[in-house]
Image 1 (tube, rainbow, N blue to C red):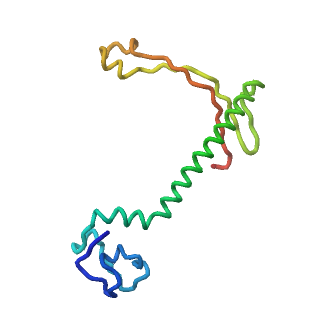
Image 2: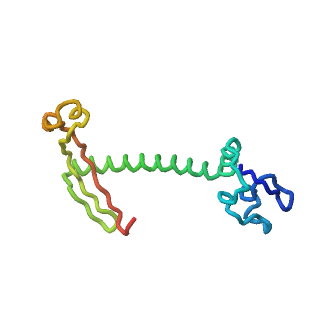
Image 3: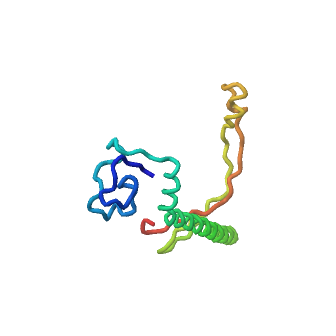
Length: 147
């Protein structure tokens, strides 16, 4: 909570006008920037609780959205895996429609430098420190219309 040297002009709140639940509605609210006015201090102990209580609905909405997003991403992965398997089965490399373009990207390998190993050994022996890793096959989906 933000504490203030000044008292509420209406006597309804003990603290800075900017912390008052009626701040946006009160015609007598302080117009000073509480960060610069020199009359206010932040009470660290209650600030977190005030934030939590005032933002609880937003926090719950974010949690719900994150959960829903994870569920949707899991569904998307499952559907893409099914499409990838079908594209492999029928040797389809590219599919185009008015709604989607789907491109099958085959499994590949790549070579990169293992920096941890390179740091332990001599910096000039980069080839000794390279490793080959397998990259799984996947499909690329583009939604037309900028989405």
